[in-house]
Structures are given as structure tokens and as C-alpha cells.
Image (cartoon, rainbow, N blue to C red; front, side, top):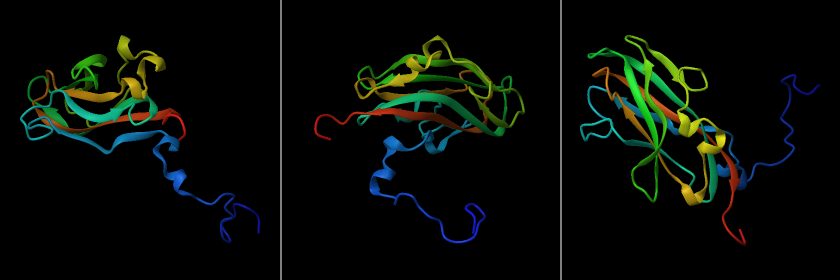
Length: 178
């Protein structure tokens, strides 16, 4: 039978090994896997705010990692205020402990009543000066940290969203002998 016709067993060219499961060689992916859930009427963590929440870690554990996209899925339309959902996205370095970089500042993710998926790559919003080039969004183990989200700096007081960061690895450096 011809290859690709759907009949017969697959003919693997290489067996899958444990090394194939390493994060460093996985294709670009979303962090966190199921997104960071945000209820604008409540909070992210039960602490009463949606400000400065860490969505994921980047550039740690021997990996050089690039932030490719910020994705926001609006699952329940915003209400209250001007009913738009607004967001800031920053970077908090491991050493500084505060946001030292702003990738997105005060962007309107969704206008009143707009449920959907929004992202930089879809053209929903543009990177700020701190994230205009891939080099500015590349983090090595020496300068790793957290991607942080501030939802609703102004705008809606109700609504729900899931936020994701899309990243990919460019290099792995575990040190000599590894």
C-alpha cells in the first residue's frame, strides 16, 4: 500500500525517547497550558486584585527563551465602567522583583461586549517599545523572570478572560559536561 493512504502500521523512522520529551526541543507553546484565568469582578488568586499577577516564567533553567505573543481569550464580555477590557503586560526579573519592562501598556483587549480571542500576532494590539524586536523579548538563564499581567487598569469591572504567553526556545545551556 502507498504511504499516506491510511492503511497499515506507521513506519517510524526513529523511536521516541525520553530526550524527545525535553521542554527545550518542544515546538512553540502556550504558557500556562490552560491559561491564567482572570475574573474581573473578583481576582486572579483570591487576594482581591488583578494587578501584577505572574502568568508564567521565562528564561530559566538553562533555556534561552523568546516571548512570541500575548494571547487573551475573552470568555465573558466586560461590563461596568466603559465596559472595555484593558491590560498591561510586563516582565519582572528574578533579581529586581518589580516590573522592569513593559511589553504592552494600557491596551484595549476587547471593546464592550466583545467575546473572542485577541493577540499581538492577530493584530489586536502592538508591542510597546520594550518589545518591538525579538531580541528585546529574548531571555537567557542569566536574565530570566516572570511575565506579569495587569488586567483592567481601567474599564470593565466584570467579565472573565484567560491569558496566555506564547514562547519558544532558541538555545539550551546547562553548563559544561551536560
